[in-house]
Image (cartoon, rainbow, N blue to C red; front, side):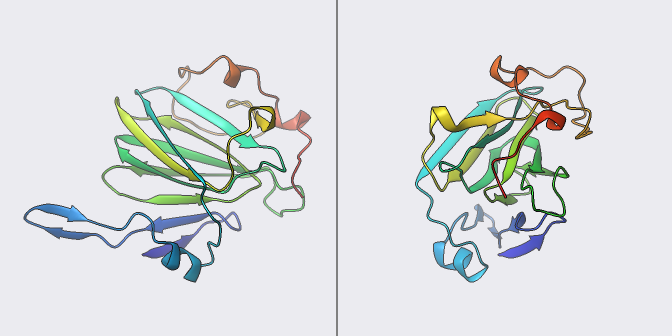
Length: 181
């Protein structure tokens, strides 16, 4: 596995070693020992999966402490533009975002530590998105940022995505009071 650092401290892009032959391919998508060797030392306690069509935007979500979650995200089939925003007040990259294409073709994974808001826009129909979480989901701790906030200036590549009612009601970053140091 190759670990690729990003401009946002702690946010890591993971490229698995893929073994191809005439039958297809094989790779380890998760190995606790390999992750620990590379500084990812969290216990994942919940796995989630979503199926979405092209133009669906999910995010920007996070869980407030003490239910904050580290996430390991990847796409099994299809593709997304994955977006992460640093919401750690003391971080030098507070309010900055990082974008990456995750797909069933490139098999990249993204480790999103606590203190980041996370979202993605589906680029293909029938996109299967998979993520591991280090804490159980808690409805009362659920929160997010408005996807099209002008302060964040995220180019999602689409003017009118399909959103949940909840994702339309989140706060602007300029009015956001972070729960993370």
